Length: 288
Image (cartoon, rainbow, N blue to C red; front, top):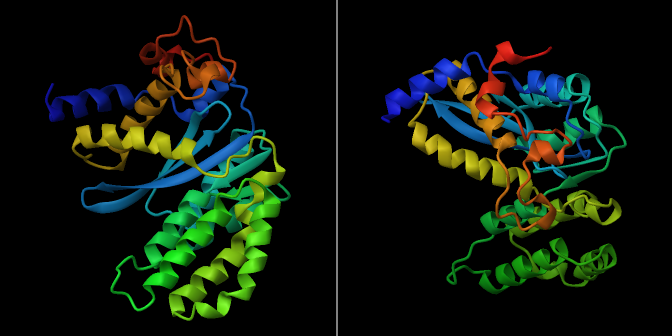
């Protein structure tokens, strides 16, 4: 099947496919309450858009997505408010990257006050790698390598006391790191330390956003095969179908034993044994 034919098929089926909200209303999944959120950039006719994705971490259910022009405050705020007010998501805690300009952090704290929020340590580790030059010709090569290793020991500590102790001890040698980027990285670590260690105090709260990133990785593989979209509506039609199929597809080789041979929807308490996802996706089959 050629790319144009696939696009036509996807658009024909996707235009009448149920939205994530309609699926939630019909199936009433029982989510675990640990919310993972992340964004992915996508180009549509040479214009940059952002797909925001919400996943229930305990069930690995990618229950909501939204397309916007940017991963900015306006789109992120609408995204989180829909999760709260429309889906009535039973939130206990959340994990996200920092978003552009800390947009996820600030909005999460306002929209979900007093709800524990974990900043993804993997994203912070990548930030450190990006800011610290790796070249051996760098004037601060030894300091850079030490700082990189030390921060990662803090980020991936086995318990909060170890992480806190390492950060406290760092005061004794902090004067050795005099480059401007050293100062900025250290300041960011101190500023975000509580956010990066929240998982030590909340059962089942992951320290990273791997579950959402795995969904994005799978989505990327399919987007490459699509060879682009005509407009945002075509992209939305495709995403409705892809997310619906992904939620019904069983995990065959999950590293988490209890997920194997279950789909994310079945893990959320939905009996999917006699449901064909493509037939279900069509709006005319909805009972709502």
